Length: 343
Image 1 (cartoon, rainbow, N blue to C red):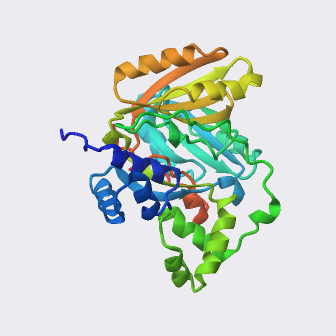
Image 2: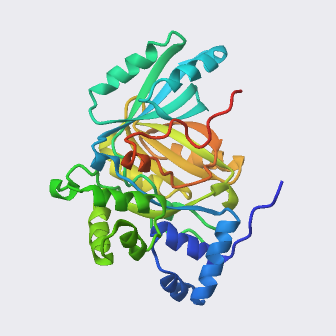
Image 3: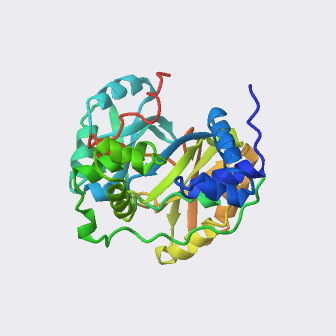
């Protein structure tokens, strides 16, 4: 087994700056790191080559595309019926991002819905399969501002206490800002796949001026494209597992305070408010198994919380780019990462 790549404080600073804004210029990075632009470029290429940086993406707000409701779907069946259920799910376009074996669930997927009324139809359709015992639904209260990249420790840099405050739900978006045309969509598709694409190159590709690209991009960043970032293979940074906490909150009026306390936990990198069997989902990157017990104890010390924890592998590309495919196809990929192998 190969050793993890070695990075120094300058590498870590480059990663941190690009996580916060992937279009940060190498010139600005060079000034902060006190090295040449050429040295920044060489280090950036090496971080790519070593597989630490795995992508340059712009995250998409599905609500701006009309998908107001993101739902996690947990499917329960008998182990011996998993292959039959997998074949059934292949025929159901409404469920996507499917993975196998998530806690008590044999399959775990997502649905992007324009109307919440259609959720019952989705569940009833899935449960029409005689081999599926039950489908649980967890509705996301928000689908943006759920990643907290600033809370990820990238050694050898210490973690700074600059975690975000409770994000404001995107429920009051100015309708005029949602009026985007095909050119806007094409710009969004390009930067969703490669967030560092030069504006001049986008203009040449679409047959418009660089100035027009910049103006449209700035408008899109206010709504449709809230986050421009790089993606990382967390395992290459020493985080071998991801702890998934599903949390019940006994007093939901304390949610702002709870967010603040959770974000004091190093490497807690995702919080999603839920509607359903649980009130919150939180993800914590773990260096080793002992850290899971430490983090669980920290969460248990927070008043009003009752957590359940699952352990899974670290993603090879985080932050997760869940919704960019909605720009082109109106659907998310059927499977998360590679198609899950048969057991």
